[in-house]
Image (cartoon, rainbow, N blue to C red; front, side):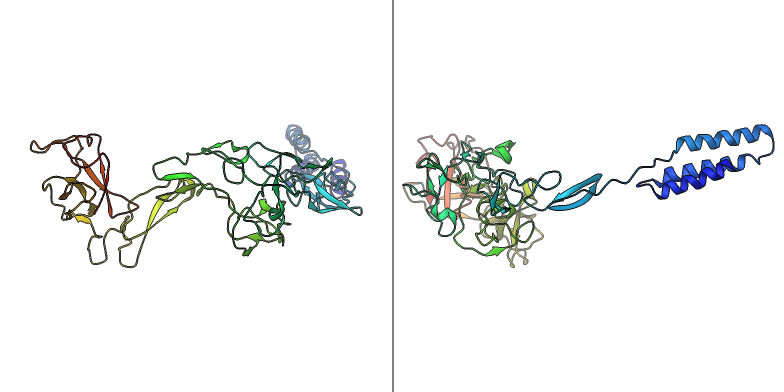
Length: 420
């Protein structure tokens, strides 16, 4: 009877408690029920064992009765439960009860926000933009700009918004008054964080390959787009306005209207290098004949060749047509189509293409071969020969290569470009 009464009281407390897990509740109930029936078990020893088991269950799964907490008085937000009850604030409000207006928010007539001061990011107005060391001091790799008349415009090509009014200054203190500071243009480097070549990401801590390969000219500069086509921000319905909402746009540029530019103002990690030849973050130049090179797969992706309608897209380099004809100037070796290696001197190999005339004082009769040989190798006692290759960017140009091409017996200048 005692166990039954305890079970009833326990259930009453459980129903009035704030939280109770199913596992704890079930274990406790089982223990109390077993305790209730243990008195009717025949025999002293079985009855004692049943009672002991019941007591163990009750002790292992005790009731934890808690008193419900008072609702949070969220001033500018709402209560949510993320592990524990807390206030979810309406931007830009902050604080435990959403009653604190952050430093970065514009206050007017007793209202907080919704817009931020130029140094802060919309909509929370608590985090500084990437170019700021503090609200009025730019990081060393950013230019200090102000809406104060000066000599040099920070963005000469800008025609709308605050960027069209900014001038480069050492400080934005004018006549003893601190004016808003804008840290938007790279002094050095490129990308959203104005990183030097070989680095990337916040505070430029990420190491990436440099843009100084054979085909990569230089880091691609940040540029304000010439045209504006509105695009939806990454989060929400508005990016808040220029400067404060740039981080909410995939293009890195928010228009004064609150929409994003569709054309990027800052290069991404993949296109940070301005390739003279090739594609992708390392300006790869994998062969692509009857098609156009592109890059797929992100930072660890690969160069791809997109074939035109005439060439077989089942091949990697679009080197053969659907009629099994090789791309012009390629050699059909019976298995695949490959480039010809061009040499000075008499016929060598079976490559069909022959360069008959070279100008600029170069020798005549450049013969293509099916295989390449080091420039220092001698064939049949003939003098050192210089390897020729077709320039990937200007296929009409033949370039002399080889470390032994300085041999004066070869009447073509050292690494000269010979026009067909």
